[in-house]
Amino acid sequence: MTVRAAEPAVRELYRLLLTAWNERDADGFGKLFADDGVMVGFDGSQVRGAQAAGHLRPIFADHPTASYVARVEEVRPVGAGAVLLRAIAGMVPPGRKELSPERHTIQTVLAERQPEGWRILLFQNTPAQYHGRPEETQRHTAALQPLADDGVTVA
Image (cartoon, rainbow, N blue to C red; front, side, top):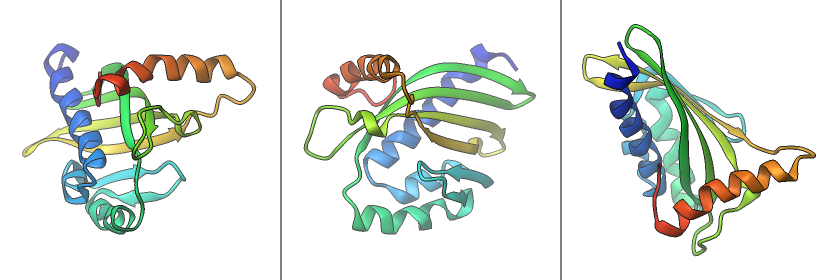
């Protein structure tokens, strides 16, 4: 499998994932995972793909969640029928247009082509704290703020 063949489908899978989050659509988010996939949340929570929707429903019901914007940094095959996507992401709190730098993250998706289409085996959402390197936080913000300004979810 070449990146050229898989990249559009995996980018679309990632866009659908962040769109489902932004729309607070727990079922839409969960259906993108393989049943044996894993989601590792910003706080370190680990949830099996089959339980992702159930995990997110109370979060969406009880908390005003921020919206993601992201820029894909790399897409590459890691074997027959599997692709790794890495992105930088940020969050825009409800009612604002500016990113919250303290919520910057590095996101990783490992996707696999399954009979029903591409599914997520791993979604890892790691805080991008950049301890002692404020210029990295500024660079992250500068890369994503134009997307937030233009209402773009994934570039």
